[in-house]
Length: 216
Image 1 (cartoon, rainbow, N blue to C red):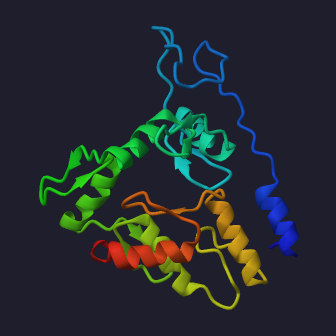
Image 2: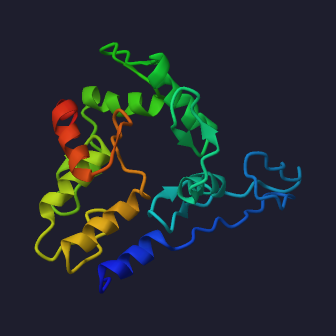
Image 3: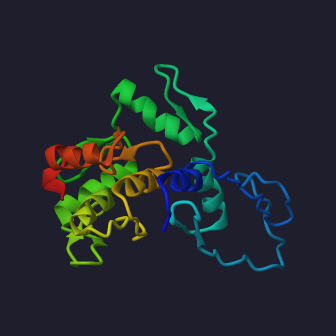
């Protein structure tokens, strides 16, 4: 638990994020996009899940972990030519450009609704299948989208003020708010259905209840 808001702010926002170089088979380069192949007589190593120390997300492999850490580095070299939005990876920029072109290449085969990216389509399909993989660890209520679960967890926050993401406890509401912002890496709160971002979690919750209410 942090003693003061200034201590919390220093811990969350002023800690330098370092991405350690990762070695692949016969390659000491820190670039994971082009790892060399293992020798023919050497069995391929089993992928080992990696947990992000910043946000707690579990990645399926070391290379996925490295790519994920770019989100926390603050480096965004790919800029949209239509607006001032910048991204840390080119695929993210390509998805964003569809908001300008109106392109929605991924179509639901049940209701014909279209989406800008495949992950959004997969999330939408849970409306038809009834799949709700995200369960509240307090009341066991299940949700189709992770952001719905995060919003729901606030209903269980008591006077003790605990983070709905990691259960960390705080003595003041301002400390809790600043801590939660740290989980979003100061880039706002994103809707996992349509990828729209919000500067406050309350705006995201209002958006979910108004726009995606039938998906919860």
